[in-house]
Each structure stands twice: as structure tokens, then as C-alpha cells.
Image 1 (cartoon, rainbow, N blue to C red):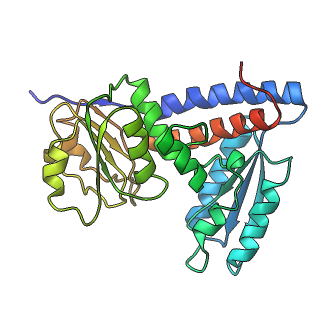
Image 2 (cartoon, rainbow, N blue to C red):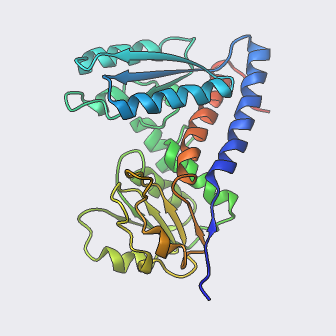
Length: 286
């Protein structure tokens, strides 16, 4: 008798989070006379990025968050982009800033991110936000790691003393999710393309977070029976980074792709935009 993992329903949880954010946004509008505003900045016309931004703006509108879109030509320089972001950082009408990345090979992305004021960094991309996540300080988390942590919480996954393996070390997914897991007393191992014996390491994991962008890199048979599997990979054809069909027969909990981590990322973005607005408008949460 093969067991089947319980699916972690990111779609349902995201709806609840967005519902709470919408209620808070309505209260802010009522009390401050202005709704939370997210500025989205896009360099060039990359079709996937255009679609993402459109989707994020549509979700904002549904939650009662205004969005202001700044589309810059593909020829924009780093200096011009920094200028735009610094302007938005100083604009009291704007509460959160999202720079859609990748920006293109000619842009110094790190320098651009650092032009975003930390209190408006609702996507959690600045060094200041990373430090806050690592040191357990007040600040905004990177949205995908934040969404993953909320999912683990919703399903009562006790992380203390557990072995968590993070596959991937990107600046706004792999690295920060490891820091957030560490803060919850997990024992964290980071793996990546240069890791020797990935299979052996995954086999030891109580919690696997796959965030590397390589289809089915994590073999289902390497999943420890009863483990929790979080698949943050997006590959063409709705294929995650985990070999789902096998993993589902071994894991206790697993995120489906789509409908797992994806919706959570946008939900955290919206929730953090509303929180940023509340902070900037001097409305502390009750």
C-alpha cells in the first residue's frame, strides 16, 4: 500500500492571506484617506516579465492596493534605473517598490536593488532585508521564502532540531530561506550545482526545499519517507524541481506545482505592501 503525501494547498492559504491584506488595505484607506500603493518597475519588454507584472498588478487591484507601473526601455542604464528607484523611494505616495528581475545583462542588479529604501522593500531584495532575515530583526522578507515559511507554519511543521536541506543558493530564494529555517532552529544544509553526492544529502533531510530551477533534479526515491517537500522550482510545462510522481508516494507533505509555493509568493508581496503602507502612514497594527 503506497501512502500519498498530503498536498500543501498554497492557493487556499494565499487566498486567506490576501483576504486579510485586503481588509487591512480597506481600513488604511478609510483611516488615512489613501490606499496602499505598490510601484512596479520593469526594464525592457521580456514577455515573461511583462506577464508577471501584469498579474501582480491585477492581484493588487483585487486587494484594494493601487499600483503605479513604470516601464523603462531596454536601453536603460544602471544609473537611470537607480535614479528611478531613488525617486520612488523618496515619493511619499508610494509605499512599496517592486523591481521585476532579471533586468538584463547590462544592468548592475545589486546596485539597482540597493536604491530601494528598506522600508519600501516589500519584495525583500536589499542587503538590509537579507540582514534582517538573518539576524531576526524587523524588516521585510523575500516573498518566496516568506511564503514557504507561512506554508510550513500553516501545516504545523515543527522545524526545531530537524534537518532541512535547501537546494539552490540564489540571493532572494535559496540563501534567505536557509536563514529563516535556521531562525526556527532547523539544522540547515545548503546544496547547489557543485554539491558532491546531492542524493545522499537529500536522503537525510526531514525538510527539502528545492529552489534551483532544474526540472526534476530532486529524485523522488531520494526523499526520506515522511519528509516535507517544498518545491519552489518553476520550469516550462509546470514541472517543478522535484520528481513529483515518485516523491508523492514517500513524502508526508508536498507542495504541488502549480498551486503550492507560487500563489504564496504574491500573497506575501501584497501583505508586505499593506504593512509598509501602515508603517509609513503611522498606523501601527492593533
